[in-house]
Image (cartoon, rainbow, N blue to C red):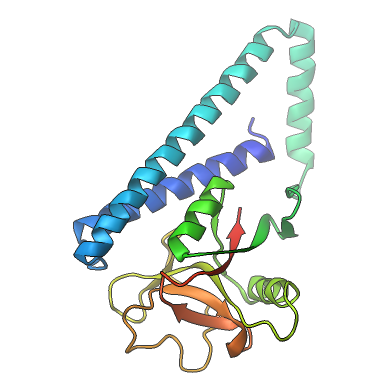
Length: 231
């Protein structure tokens, strides 16, 4: 039976696979998002994602092997007791237990990290994946309120910020914004007034903007801003 930590690793692995497939489609022109220069850039990103996925798979294999080794050395009576206890726990536990790493904030069943280190959207995504997550998606008003509060309390009132989150524009079609972690379309939105700009086709990445009352803004992906990871 998988533990909470095991399930989190599996979810992160699938997120990485989904992102990898999306980048391949982008590179091949299926979504019409890439110019020649962007294609070259994304090719380098794919190489990075392959390396990250290989590291994750290697880590999971070592963990699995270690668990199997420990299991074979447990006396038969002890193993039976553990199986019984595990089954009992699974049938009586109704709430998922989430423990966040130091520096991360818990909300519902996820952990969030606001990085004060400024980076481009692509570099921020790579950093979040190294942490075992992705740039945050926002799928409800409650989660959006949490993200707003996280952003607002991290800086003094006079600080102007555009904090990257995980939304990206696919192609040049204004409504076709998706979350990079799942590639799902947006089911909840909180765009600032006049956003996203229909005339600014170079603004394909999403951020939370202080000048818009901590609402969403479309940004140039090459802009360097703070960012929020979710896992």
